[in-house]
Image (cartoon, rainbow over all chains, first blue to last red; front, top):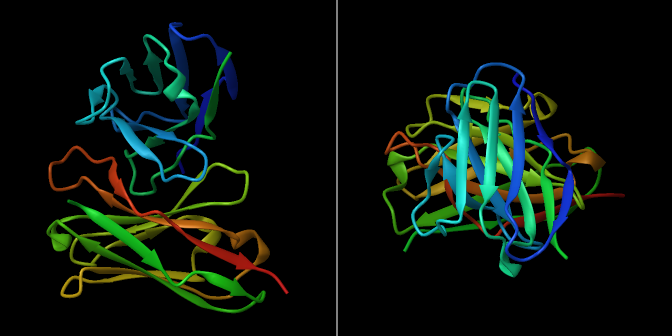
Length: 107
Length: 121
């Protein structure tokens, strides 16, 4: 099975900062990676699909990059509403594994 | 508007069974793969399993294989999760999600609000 890791597990940043979250797959997943944002008590929200494509309706300050085993989610200008936990998920195999999550706090 | 609504959660004793449902509306249900995802209290997301558009292919995380079964009724726009031999570590909020399979993009682009399952004596 494909394992996913994320770093850091949590971070604290200021409004306006550029934030980068890393996701690594245990084997090549090509570009079959999605990123989600989840706020407490709410269902996850799809931000990025196919590693770098922005989901319709998602703010352009979110971007994704990477291919193969290493991927990043970047929030270019952090806003208070971005406080949440972010998860990556692979789709290369039919067993869709999530990463453990990265919690983003606003200073 | 695409909507997914889960139901059937509740409190069940260890070793017991529970059946969850998820009704979809606002889209052609039969054209999409569907997934179940769960989240234990204070923990991250765990993919539970998925089912192909026509129900001919299903996949499960190892921890539920042989205990959980996913099915669907496309005539009723409904996804099911039959859970047997429940354990305390199955306690979680269970979400159903639509996979954007029709476009080929994938990613779970719509989610239900979730239903709570608690396994305890």
